[in-house]
Image (cartoon, rainbow, N blue to C red; front, side, top):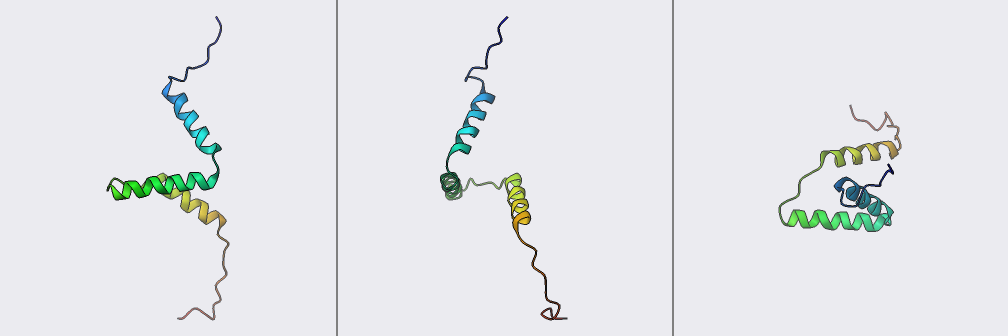
Length: 77
């Protein structure tokens, strides 16, 4: 028996193809599309915050933000 590849009718494969296509686009275009989609959802009062996206964003910013030392003489007691 020969192994056959999954057809594009498989929803899991179609979803993966969409993700690959989205990741292949330039970053600015992906960001612009995401902002446009969110603005449309807010205007239609359908926007829901995705907690996973928020957590990813916080973690990404936390990892890339340099630690700034606090001068003890500037802190009021």
